[in-house]
Image (cartoon, rainbow, N blue to C red; front, side, top):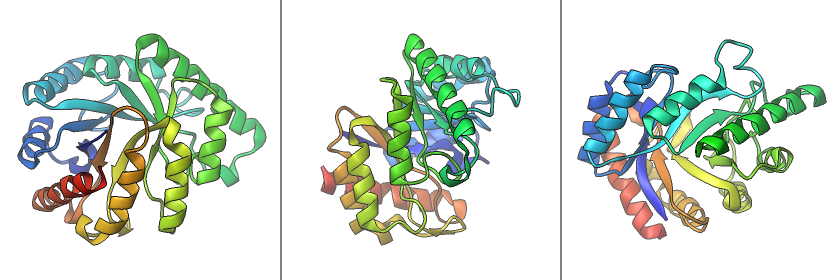
Length: 255
């Protein structure tokens, strides 16, 4: 079953308390908290505070959006142990990561297997702690096309490794649905937005038909997950409330 939620980085300028209040007002159910602003890596006090704020509001911590880049972050000064500590203190059942720092067509064989080795490592560390690991389906990573995301899941080959999904630029609706169907057995959460480009965000209602089909497909995947709004037109809370209403309508139609 799909539940409606928000990715907290949608409102980087708001405090965690303000984000929680906005999500409650919108009638959504879960929040993916970002590791860059709202719950910084290693700040366990902030993680506890945000967990309590979320739970006291009757909401769920859906995930920790860590921005850990497999194969890179460890060497750049962000140990995965710090990310995992924060996720555990936050009460997050899943950590979102990025599969490397370059697109699949620009990574050589040796570099690719270095990233895969790190993904295997952190998937195992997460499994021991009871936290799932999921790569964002995103440009500039090894999970940047349907084929590369599927290949990555096969190469990592770990039962604790999953994939997010979102429509990437220039992907037709048919290609989107093909990718969603292929990812269903390992699908984590879905990031929901309606963009022409990253800087030209549109009302979610303009994509009602396509998102009904996307979320109908995502709902076929086993177990519960979240469809979470990520960024809204003009970064405006009132536009978020408008899109949240649309999201709930789309989820009802796609169930």
